[in-house]
Length: 142
Image 1 (cartoon, rainbow, N blue to C red):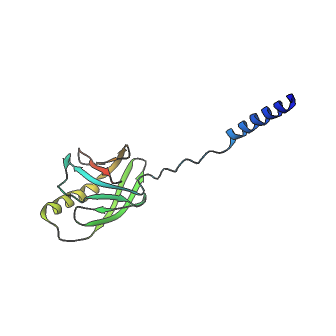
Image 2 (image 1 turned 120 degrees about the vertical axis):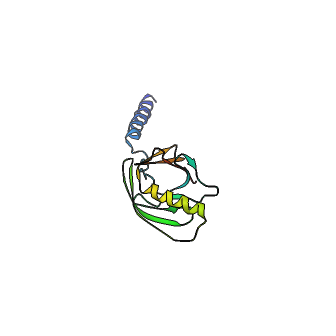
Image 3 (image 1 turned 30 degrees about the vertical axis):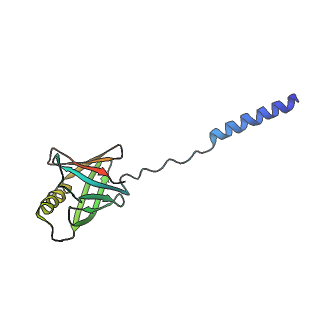
């Protein structure tokens, strides 16, 4: 019976040691912003217009799409670490009310000036601009 106890103990130790060597679940790859959707909350430190539809979507880490406030847009994206640069953006040309048109023009102009980004708690996205003191502030659309 003593021998059986030692055999069981040896088996448990060897299986435990082997369990430590088994590969664990692979860490999820960092997708960056790919697949995320954001709603614009502030420009130049001020809230966007009421019922704004301004948004920013990242289908992958090389392209971007969204709503300027009235019109849809799409374009290319370059990311390197926390650096970000939008390529030329193409937008639809629907008629918009004056406030939406003004906000859209400012928003698309601001996107062209983006230099870097920061995400806080996966819920808030800040896009920092080269020539402005205040970043664009977005909230995650879940």
